[in-house]
Length: 173
Image (cartoon, rainbow, N blue to C red; front, side):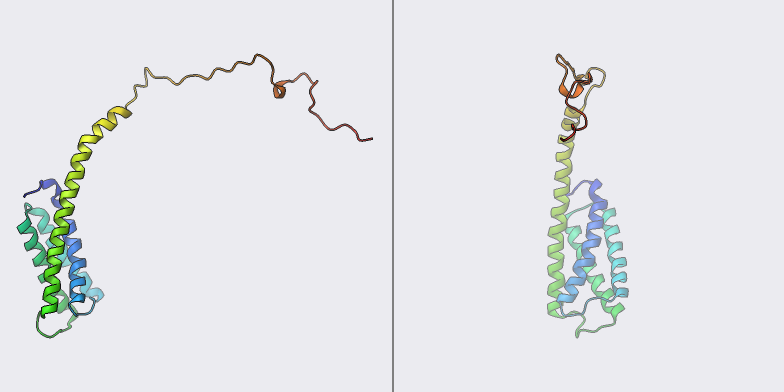
């Protein structure tokens, strides 16, 4: 299923950001150490480039999986080269499984998020005109009611005749 091109920038951002996080996590779960600051910056640059490429091509499940797999492979290579750590074979089975699992989880998450945001946008497109129509008020014909104040008998506080009980207390004897 191909999704509208309007969601392509969002898809690219999500793929790039998710690839950074999931690649670092999969690399750590696979037995390597967490990336250093320089490796994290290099990984961010690589995954940003992949996210940008994803945002420029039409979407599809197979393209999404390929992009996420490329992000995992290039991310693994970046972390290995920049940090200079060697963890036995270039990709031991535990790390390969972590990266493959990251591709699967990432593909499901990105595809689900994209479908969800499209459904939410369609719902808002249907609901928003109704909400705005109900909220619209014609200010030329609708005026607020003026309060009517009627005083038939003067209230005790408004009695200004001087015969009231207000004043200083009487002298004590």
